[in-house]
Image (cartoon, rainbow, N blue to C red; front, side, top):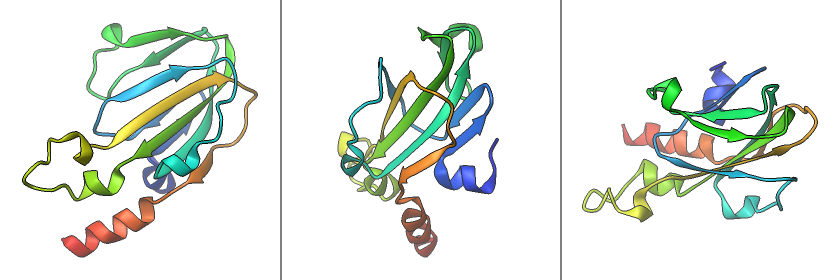
Length: 138
C-alpha cells in the first residue's frame, strides 16, 4: 500500500482500504454526490476509489483501537474519497514561538460520496516542493 509514489501522494490505496498519511485530525464529510472543485483553496488534493461492500465506512488513526473507530453509513459499493490538505508549508516549517497555534497546523478534509470505481488521481500537489525545501533545512 505504501509505495514510493503513495508516500509522495500521502495516499495509500488498496481494494478495501485507503490510508491517508497525516499527523493531525481530519474532518470527514459524507456527501450524496461529487463536491464542487475547490482544489485552488488547498495545497494538496488526491482522490481514490474505495469499495465499501458492507455499507460502513470505518475511519481510524494508525494507533487507534478498531472497535473504538468512527463508523459511517454509506451506500454499499464503490465510493470516491477526496483528501484535501492546506497549510502544509506552515506545518512543515512552523514558527517555533507558536508552533501549536492553528495557523501552524495542517488541515485535512476528507470527502466521500458514492461513485463508480476510477483510478487514483492527484488533483493538486505541492508535496515535492515541500520535501525539497525540508531537505535543504537538514
